[in-house]
Length: 103
Image 1 (cartoon, rainbow, N blue to C red):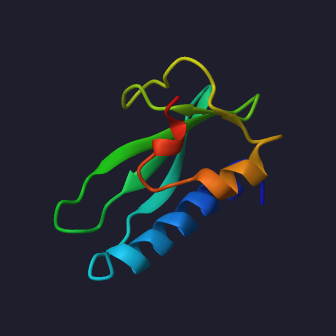
Image 2: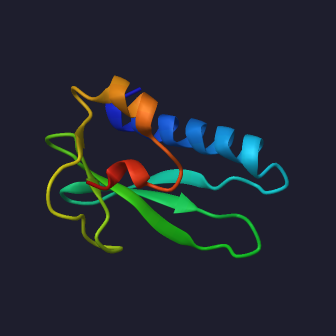
């Protein structure tokens, strides 16, 4: 499992735990990777009655830096985390609502 897969697994694990504890009657969203030329887009896919998708974050494929989403197609400026060095920190701070990506 590569670092991007591990990052997505952490997001999914934290989201599942949050829903089990606080929203037990709802189905948690799933997260998938959509590779692009420079970034891997991490997308939240909802299966509830509202459906739809939204961007959770972006990961630079060459540097493995994590970025907050600015829009569906682009990351915000300034890397928030580096998967090479911050994986343990991410295990502690990741939340389903991307609050950990704000400065």
